[in-house]
Image (cartoon, rainbow, N blue to C red; front, side):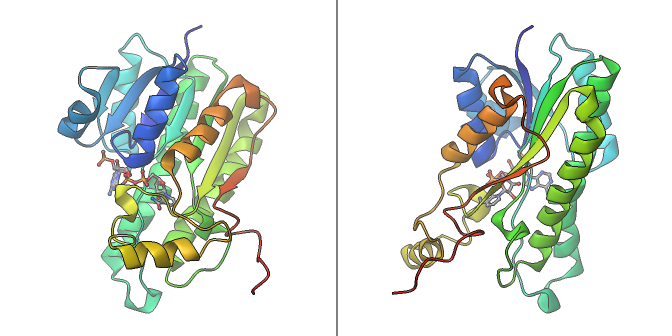
Length: 246
Ligand SMILES: NC(=O)c1ccc[n+]([C@@H]2O[C@H](COP(=O)([O-])OP(=O)(O)OC[C@H]3O[C@@H](n4cnc5c(N)ncnc54)[C@H](OP(=O)(O)O)[C@@H]3O)[C@@H](O)[C@H]2O)c1
């Protein structure tokens, strides 16, 4: 059976890094973005491209209806849609909070539901990987909204992996620290901001989306066939260690 993966947020920094690696590993891709122009600019006429919005159930239904009408049936999902909304909660506008929840958590719920429904309809086994953040597991200032959204994703991943393990469906998350992508542009826009961000990590530096993509490729592959229900930190030790202060 040919290897087919669905990538949402395919025009983004992580989505592009992942697409590149999966193509090199002989996967056929279905690439989703809200913007046809962005997809064409990045991928030209390569791979199947779908314009859609996965932040709501109707948008996801339309995406899977196009997939069902095509010859490609995905058994892997990488949900790379998301954003970073930072502000102290007492000063965050309700619209920003809702945008953060819709873009990160609601999109993850609807897309994963649609994908599982697709696998069940076709009696396929499969694998999904969602994107969380280091902020889901360690308290960092001004991250209340994104922590809530990404913490919700990690909890949902555990529950969904329990629900569908017996159907041969594996579900994991990756939890990166800051990465050099458009989503983080506002946080690392100048040299000083970059240096400050880099210093927050026990292994200093800004994450490369290609490294996170590598982990995602592995999680989607058969090499990870015994792995489900986990959030994989890839954050320079940020969420799990405190180095000796010298
Ligand atoms: N960059 C970081 O430092 C960092 C750190 C931890 C976690 N993450 C997570 O990593 C994932 C990938 O993000 P990235 O870093 O690759 O950022 P990115 O380049 O901005 O890509 C994010 C993608 O999400 C989609 N998106 C953004 N806002 C949306 C909205 N309101 N509704 C629907 N889709 C929307 C966009 O797709 P279209 O515009 O093409 O539709 C975009 O391509 C996200 O879940 C992000 O939260 C990033």
